[in-house]
Length: 112
Length: 113
Image (tube, rainbow over all chains, first blue to last red; front, side, top):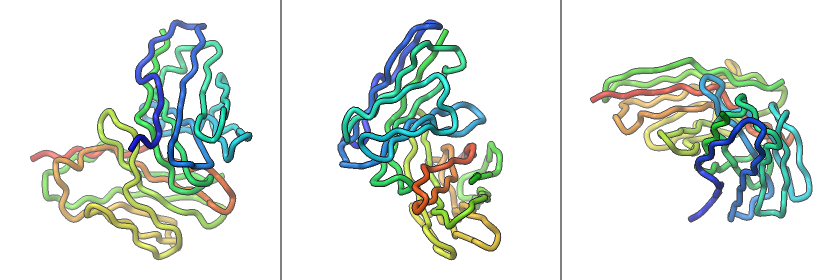
């Protein structure tokens, strides 16, 4: 049971470098999400995609871009990484927006 | 806008103690309410949920009742185990409005034997 799969699991970047976090789900869900988790801040929504072909900003979208490649895949791109983007990133999906969401295992990103 | 407030931790208990983690919410409509649990090094997993007032969600000995009059969804367990040590997140969503889940900041529970 794969569920939500995200890669890479760990990454160290230098300030100014770019990278893409990949996410795929095999549950035929319409909605997908990217959250970041920081100590004392809980989970904050970066971007979400209610359905294939649509994307919307969440609470903390600055410095990120997303692509809903198809129904299964939703990627998160950091164009020019900053130390403030050091965080744990979680991809998630749900049948429709607002329903129970299912999380991937997380990607630990450090920007030095 | 919608928001979730949960008690700050950490909460430290001995095995078999009673657990309560408080959660209150602010919402404009009729939200669904959730509790998620995160074990060390893992993603979040749904623990329980309730979709309308007076509903009680339950799972693995945990339970929470949707109280519209007090805008609360407190998590309880009668007898905690060491294996319950984790971070617990309260969350809400408004399905009809199509909003993504909004999470509280999380409460760390540590249970000792």
